[in-house]
Length: 102
Image (cartoon, rainbow, N blue to C red; front, side, top):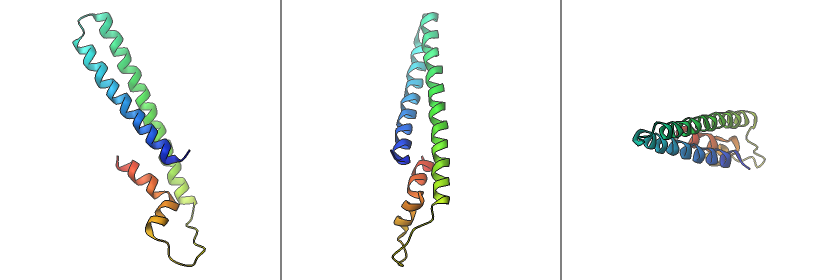
């Protein structure tokens, strides 16, 4: 599985956890029963922890992609200058840049 695929999956999971936090906060704020509201707040905290884990994993993958970018020089056996798209892909820049922008 590629780093780009993993990053995409982690971003989707992060979005799902953020959505769940918003949903459960709203439910907890509307709930009249203290016991039920506490259950919703527990769900909020659970999804916040999971979202934090996703962010940490995204950060680790970005570090890995950058280290791969630095350690993998462009291989040009044809003698011609590589296009910037080819050079970016071989260096991993096309993986890191879109994720960093998000």
